[in-house]
Amino acid sequence: MRDGNDRVPGMRVVVVGGGVTGLAAAAELRRLAGPHLQVTVIDQSDRLGGKLWTGELAGHPVERGAEAFLVRVPEALHLARQAGLADSLVHPAPVFPGLVVDGQLRRQPAGTLLGVPGDLEALAAAEVLSQAGLERVRSEPPLDAAELIRHGDVAVGALVRRQLGDQIVDRLVDPLLGGVYAGRADNLSLAATMPGLYAQLERHTSLVEAAAAAQREAPRVDGPVFATPKEGLSCLIEAVAKQADAQYLLGAPVRELTLTAQGWRLVLGDTRDPEVITADGVVLAVPARPAARLVSTVSPVAAAEIGGIDYASVALVGLALPTTELPALSGLLVPATEGYLVKAFTFFSRKWPHLATDGLTVVRASLGRYGEEQTLQRTDDELVALVRRELSAIVGRPLPEPVDTVVTRWGGALPQYAPGHLDRVRRARAALDKVSSTREGPPAIALAGAAYDGVGIPACIRSGQTAAARVWEALTRRGSQGETTAEGETDHE
Ligand SMILES: Cc1cc2nc3c(=O)[nH]c(=O)nc-3n(C[C@H](O)[C@H](O)[C@H](O)COP(=O)(O)OP(=O)(O)OC[C@H]3O[C@@H](n4cnc5c(N)ncnc54)[C@H](O)[C@@H]3O)c2cc1C
Image (tube, rainbow, N blue to C red; front, side, top):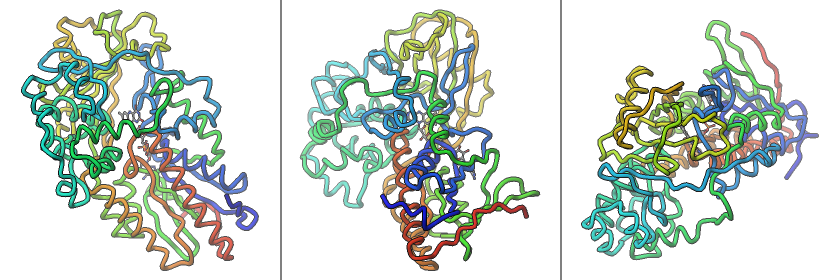
């Protein structure tokens, strides 16, 4: 680690976007640069956290966005520990997740990689496929990876349908991928959503073998796979924000970004009374569409690339029910082929035993499969009624009137990694790097967040940290060349 602080007094880095990516970037900048770097985090919302937001239901904390983070990809666990939350982490109860198949409830089979089976015995034992569906999986044709991925990537659905048949996609892969990306297997990139499996393709003549090998080679963790702070994920956001010791400008949409001889110039806030901020470095940690708008004057090529990343919208409906008996599962995935609009239910009060819900049964439903946005064009009351109706039909008994409900709508919730996504992101980053031709050294700007390098919380944290390191490296290199341009002042136009 190089400490360029003595050479670069008064430097400022602006992080646009105060979600988990932006805050991880801010904390990393503070770690790398020490106390003298001015770090400013700007968010258009009046709160930090983006998709991490702990709300309330019947007087109890409930997540209105993300619920927990994966421990196997270590960045979130490390960040939580560094932020002093090691003792407050809790884990889900060891209860199986379920799946609706032909109207029946089943446990999700063990040994799959996002639904792609690596263990045919476990798949058969789970009874989620018909006999014909299982036979189709067992009679997999030889895998010709070179032919399939000759364009560098392939849609998950195309590969799995061809090797293992439609049923495994419709009943397992599609709902499991939908649970992470709110997307459809037929539209999502294998290289971007299942890099471990993609890396195995050329070494195996069967997709099942490749899925087994990818699972064997995945990093192992002893103990629970997921964790979350017992007070909720907003607590992680607060702790990291404190650690980053940045200046926070909330309720301030960044509307323009330009590169001037003095550095980056950002225009934010109200159009009638805009504020201008100059910065030496910028981390853009906003979703792809606002990022594309912001870089359009700096690099139209990068803007066109990231502007092409599509998004799925999601609505979450939380119900607090009087004590209600639900299946002994942590929740349920509902394949699109089952004919319901809800795509997943989480039985919160069973899955998270630390939640003191005073005997209430708390359920959260997720709606909004990619391409079915009209589902969400209902009032909150209509969504609540729909969720009650569908859960009653699935569990086979009427549900009581809820004591409380909460509906959260996430327009543009999750980026859709289409085939070729990784190349698209590489091209966008390379185009932004070319902006350096007008200046000495690499331009101190980096793209980070769910749009690019993985949607899970740990991947977003890693993306933010990498972007911060990249910007800091560029600044210290420039600082060492005597190119400091920092002004770090805020003017009103
Ligand atoms: C419903 C849902 C459930 C999820 N569940 C999980 C889960 O359980 N586990 C998991 O690991 N992941 C989960 N995810 C994914 C994960 O939460 C997100 O991918 C991640 O939080 C995204 O973080 P981010 O900082 O990149 O983006 P965001 O959280 O979207 O933050 C971007 C920020 O940029 C701000 N912004 C946008 N435009 C501008 C602008 N012009 N100027 C200033 N600010 C701007 C926004 O206000 C926002 O605060 C879930 C996602 C959703 C939607």
